[in-house]
Structure formats: structure tokens, C-alpha cells
Image (cartoon, rainbow over all chains, first blue to last red):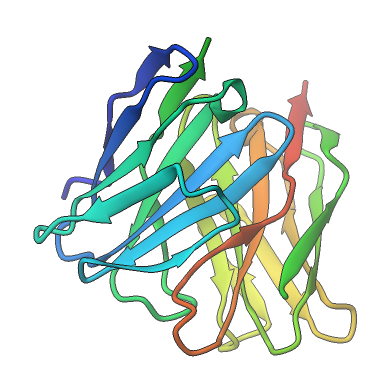
Length: 114
Length: 116
């Protein structure tokens, strides 16, 4: 069974540009979570999607947005990139949305903003 | 609000020695607690989780953790360290509040080094 897959694995963008990151959850998983792992800031919750709807978002500006498609895959969009957006972006999926449900993580997308 | 605190950003042990990674939580209600491991340039892998079924939780790769409500702790242990255990370890908490989903709040991580 395929795990959570993220694309691309690495990318470099210039400040002010826009970027789209993609995530395919494990088959049957309806919940997708996005986290940012920036140097010195640790792992921070970005967004939660379940059944196609945004259910919760972390303390990030509106230029961080996303969506979930009918097949439960998800995109994370970041507009007007800033240098501090350089980070590893991790996607996780879970079967259901109840607390305590195991979240399975992808390998991440390493974003570098120059 | 829920939070976890990991004491010690770096821990070094000898191969074969006991591994002890500390995690204390703060939560107004009994939380769900997790330990994840991250190898370089990879995502997170779940080691074990506490969901109130048993206070001593056994996980993969010989790791275990004990939930102690009186100490608000969930420390991770392994009796004998192996070189392959060198990685970064994260403690995380999620809540039991309706509608909260399984949003995880992570500690700052502990880098484990295993020396010969």
C-alpha cells in the first residue's frame, strides 16, 4: 500500500513568487494535515482538511491557503513568498478525524526561498 | 491550550545504554500523546501513542513510554540503544475536544546521538 506522497521533493523559489505543493493521502484516508518545519521554529500546524472542507488552520497569514479535492488529495498554496517561508512542508493523512487517530506523514517538500 | 515540553534538545548515549527522552504535557483534559521519530531528510514515523487504554505503551523498534498523570509526563525509553536509533524524536499531543480533529502540537524535538 502506498504511503503519503508529496511533490515536488525540493524546489527553489524567489521572494515574491507563488508556490503550490501537492499531497496524496493514503488510500481511504479523508483527513489531510499540513505542517511547516522551519529551522528554529519546530513543527507547526498549518491546515486541516477533511471531506473536502477546511476544518482548522494554524496561526499563519492568509497567503497560506489550500484545498482538498474530491479524491482527498490536497494542495498547499503560498503566495508572495518570503525568505522565512523556507522550510520543510509536511503533509499527513489519517483515517477519520477523531483525536488520537494515527497520522501518517509524507517525506515532505523542502522549499527554499531566495 | 495544549502543549508539550521536551527537556534536552540533544541527548547522547553510548551504544547499548538506556535511552531516556523526556516529555511533559500540559492539557486541561486527558490528552492523546504521541512519539514520532524523524530521520534526516525524511518525514515523521510514529513510534507509539497513548490513548488511555494502558499507561505503559509499547511501540516499534523496542521503544516504550509510560503515561504518568501525576507528573504530567510521557517519557520515551529504550533499554539498549542501537546506532540506528540516532535521529530526532518529537513528542506530540492532540486533544479530545469535539471538532478538533487530530491536529498535533509538537515539542521542539530531541536529537539523539548514539556513540560507539
